Length: 380
Length: 177
Image 1: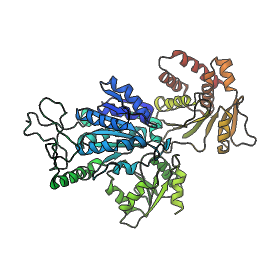
Image 2 (image 1 turned 120 degrees about the vertical axis):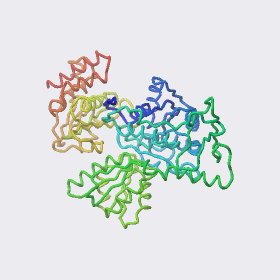
Image 3 (image 1 turned 90 degrees about the vertical axis):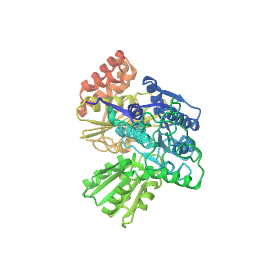
Image 4 (image 1 turned 180 degrees about the vertical axis):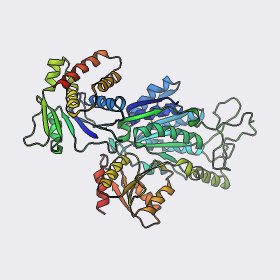
């Protein structure tokens, strides 16, 4: 049986445990509230597991170090919050273009800029999707419990390795600092995905570090390995990793970077349904707002209102099919979130069914309450 | 069964630590119990208002903050004043009689002891006022077994036998009140 340990810890600590369990062995970062406990935990735990922690001078270099370590073969991660996440965008783009797996934990706080450094928000969702310039797609996961911080961290590393791409873990101050019960089950080897390696005996002449002919990435040997030269660049490149600025190549690379995520959406996305079977009104939400929404659903059910919730665990790519199902099923959808409507706008894009889509927003740095969510429904 | 407990006072009184003991005892050492803990988190430092929300339940917990406490411990006037208008008729209000003057006509069942003075005179350690109060809350609420709480102390303060012993003394005092 798999080894399992029960703990009472905060989300940020569970992230570190999850990263170690997933096989991460490199962290580069610049501590920032409310994510600093991840840096602290990584500094403590990585050396105990043969890994390396580096405190960098800023988040630009942190992201660069992450990509370097991952190219060399190590599963790598960093943690930050809004201001640091902004600085990481350029090298995040390099990670996407060069197809370098890594995981970035953004423990969201109130912004923009320094904002209210210790107060929660969920307002980096659009930055996660579009912060990097140029057409691309991205995988972003948002946890709603300390258990998620452990389990979904492992998922995040697996997706990063499988799809050779940076994965964003969009936590928030509430979940990062919430302490609660978590059961950490050590994953078995078959539950861990390690990047695909070239077939044994592959020669340099045969080797292609990139493959644009399918929606799955090419094998990725570590840079510096004795047999195969692994080329990469942030410039648009061909299968050999060499600069390829021809119109056809630019076009296929652009499509490939989007398609390898969007065409695998069923494999990537995770949703959870709560009391949706007979629901007449539904909430669609993510992250810390899920906690308040579950309580709101329970309160409404106690009053005889048939309420339910769809949790989008994977914020990007959006689980379009599951969101459409809900919009088709109910007459009213409310989207609770701690921003001014970033997810609500996305839900409306799918609303071909005449469903009324309402918002429940909170932006004062205080966790949205179940009462506020219920009020948004009742005030319609 | 869900119990919503607010531990409030000023920074340095060990309230988050007491909250952790509650959460650990419930979630690790009791059968089928869940717990959440959220602490006020800001630029506050030693001596300014602080509070910890602990929810203990036999069901998974949704919203983790506490708007109306079932149980509140107030170890400072500033904390009492901040919460007094949120008490309902059944709220059990535990307060330090040396530090807090209850508001006239306030709702809730007020239970006052000089926890801080007792910690000095009867336990010999000023940092155990919160543990005395914890023992009293456990007894009156029928919440948690002493054994689970002692396991939580042993877990939280592993290798610090003196700390564990002094907390057991304080806990026993609270349980005997």
